[in-house]
Length: 231
Image 1 (cartoon, rainbow, N blue to C red):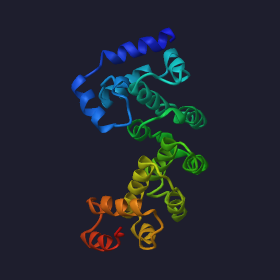
Image 2 (cartoon, rainbow, N blue to C red):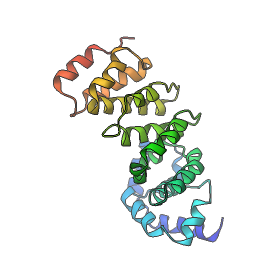
Image 3 (cartoon, one colour):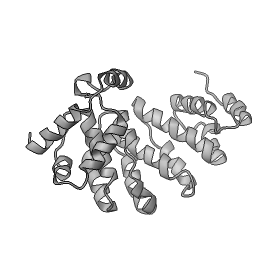
Image 4 (cartoon, rainbow, N blue to C red):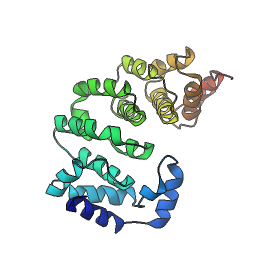
């Protein structure tokens, strides 16, 4: 291990909170607790902000795989701070294959995508076609975060519905996406539920998450419940 990465690890261990580690590990059953230091997310974001634009940051971004969960999160936060869109995409392409849990995956949301929605469409389509669980999940998350408001197109729903997987963390994100779509683009998304275009588990989980949302009206919730598929 090079000196810069060793120093970054040491600084992360200085921020550890063992109670938080115990709590966080329970939420991440796929992550080996031995690889979790126990640093709270706001502290990691501050750490990444301070590390950004230093020579050490460049070394860190080029050192994969990382040893610790928190290092992966810092890596994602460093990518978020890059101002050049092409560089962000290049760094994501390098890093996404190393993501091994839902928490790291869901924390990363480069704001620069807002200024490059058209260009990012191609990348998202490719991520959705990946064979890697968390690359698919990341692509779905970007589709949910940036393309359900003013930038919405009905075809995006088809992209999401075309994803079929045996992976829990993929299907949960598809359900989250469609539940959010029901809140923001109700009539467009509803047809996917009425016509049963999703896998049964994902269909029912979408309805469950939608009826739990305060953004869905009571009338809509009553109707959505009637669309649940009985196994």
